[in-house]
Amino acid sequence: MMRFLSFETDGGHSFGAAVDGGVVDLGRRPDVAAKSLREAIAMGALAKLAELAASSRPDMVQGDVRFLPVIPDPAKILCIGLNYETHRLETGRQVVGHPTVFTRFADTQIGHRGQIVAPKVSRSLDYEGELAVIIGHGGRYIAEADAFNHVAGYACYNDATLRDWQSHTHQFTPGKNFPTTGPFGPYLVTPDEVGVIGPQRIRTRLNGETVQSATLGEMIFSIPVLINYVSSFTPLRPGDVICTGTPGGVGAKREPPLFMKPGDTVEVEIDGVGLLASSIVSED
Image (cartoon, rainbow, N blue to C red):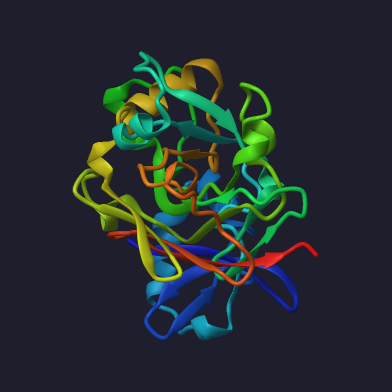
């Protein structure tokens, strides 16, 4: 169908669709009721908006777009830890029977081509390339067999982590929620464009060097299992985000450790989904 994005203009925040030649600004069209991508998802309007965008001339070229997180204001961001065997092994964690779940705050997110600010209280800023699942049709106790019917689309995510703060206790929350550490984008790509989840390769590159590489089919807990499990303890709403975990190769488990620092660039690329780029700057 289409690739949707959220972005910022001089007039404020809007959302649109990527088409040949640029971006169609859907949020400012008088014939579009939704004023954000999350609203459009909740209204079940993505298919109609895709048709509208396909028949419209672009309002701007993509190079002029200031990307926001794909969903700037999700009610929930639910992150899955240790969901690739290579990452479980490198961390020395035991095999578990249920997904490891933690949360990220919406105001920690940034868009494509944004800046991750390396905080002055840590030198352990790590990368975690992930596939994000954006919920379309919400629900509770969603059956695994019906799970993909609840997916609006997919995007790239970098669950950048302050490893020392993550390790202060057994709870992950502090290390996962520093400001500007959640790059998310560039686009919500509809499921028909991505195809059956499994063979797509996910890669993270730091300064052009591949540091993580796996296929989505290597997840320990599949997307249907995650949606079923998460929706059993919390109702899912349109626009909610599930970050499905990162493969092995994280900087903290390398010898010597490889952490991101000011001046670096980091990219997360997933076949059929897109390429999410960020730069690292100093808080100082």
